[in-house]
Amino acid sequence: MDSCVFCDIVTDQSRARVVFSDAHTLAFFPLTPATRGHTLVVPRTHFTDLWAMDDASVRHLTRTTLTVGRALRSVLAPAGMNVVNSAGRAASQSVFHCHTHLVPRWPGDAMGPIWPPRGEGFDDSAELDVLVDRVSAAAAADSADSADSADSATG
Image (cartoon, rainbow, N blue to C red; front, side, top):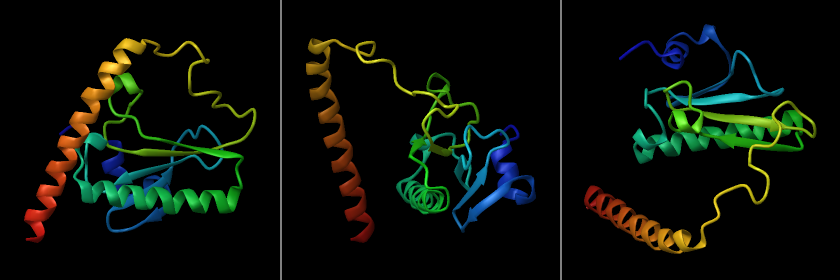
């Protein structure tokens, strides 16, 4: 594997402003925060993105995201907060070690809107009708597979 800046930070926490750490995750301020309090939450184990992670690792990442997000809300009292996890270049992922951004938000901050203006998104009702059936079937199959795996692990 090529060098990973987030793995380097996990190994040497003096390289970042760490706000939270446990056995599975690390949370720190990025070098160039988008807003005051912008925090990255990363798993200690290298995973390219969320889809490469096992369920237990996702639970640890989510738990730390909630813990740190609550702390940011308590300390900064932002007007809102974005929780962003990008997977793949097309989704603006630039560091290929799974990470979640916690971005405290205030009116008029540098982030700006994250969604296209109303009416400029995807709008094909016929395709959406077909897609809802396909995605529902795939989700049901994945859920059944996950339940079967959990049953055989406890069983």
